[in-house]
Image (cartoon, rainbow, N blue to C red; front, side, top):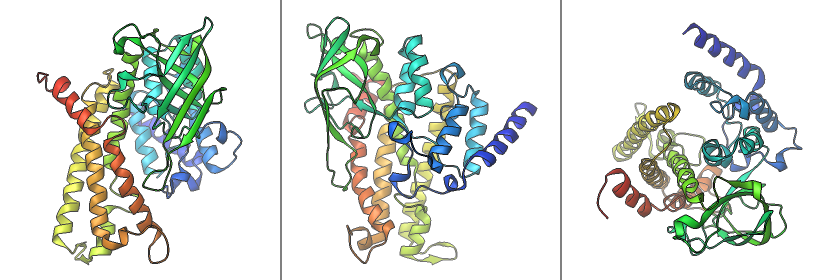
Length: 397
């Protein structure tokens, strides 16, 4: 216990010394989130400084092994680190699909050489990753994908198309599912490749969403050369890796349901008091008060369940089919949260531009529309229900 308290004090002192004051303010815009990558390498602002300092410590991935650039912390030390970062109101130094999805899969399936090459770059935010899974004809039935990778001796030649590739127009590398064998059942002929988005033959086109943003893209591959050493796992063994990565992704998406502030830096209760009045320190409208209280109780229960699962993961248990429960519940709760906020704001949450609306109100309109995508991305809610029925509850087909 004494050693843990010493670690806490040292961590607190380090954060106080190294976290720039602007990095202790809440993120007010998606443009303020740090994704790293090549575009960030030349910057010298506070965001880059905080990323570099946390990356050097390995604390962007605190429990990853130190030999791969991670922090090498025990689960108890990692918990202390997160507590001290929250106490200092420190922003996450890096948001990355490499951390939340690809990295855990590499730790489990990549060769030693691949781990030593890619994982330190993920930790330091040197690569902005995107995911090449869905295709125009292969969404819910992902295993029917048709993007081909032909064996050309010392390299693969990739041809095909992906869709809904988040931030592909800004990304440096892609982790991509490709078909390498057409003579076997569809699940058995898929491989998992990593390659540079700057490779000749890669073309990206952003997709405009109803929310007004364009984080999703169409991505086209025409005779893209991929070195053989960028195959992860066994040839035609990519479906096993894909399933594990999807479990990590679904846990990540499910966590969206925990935010109670919507697109605002304020919490739902504070917003409700402004729009529906306040009496004796409480939300004046009893119906709204009940709705907000239910959201907070649901979020507390969900948080407790996620923490229990996180502890199991730290004990060496990989995510399983139960991640579909978190994805289903978290995304549906996130939609309900935004619907509640729109209801609270009334007509002020229906603006798109122009005078008469605050930035917070305009932001909530877009966040409400964006929340509908949560129940589609990472596997639709219907797909999650099927997985829960078959893999968690053991119900017959």
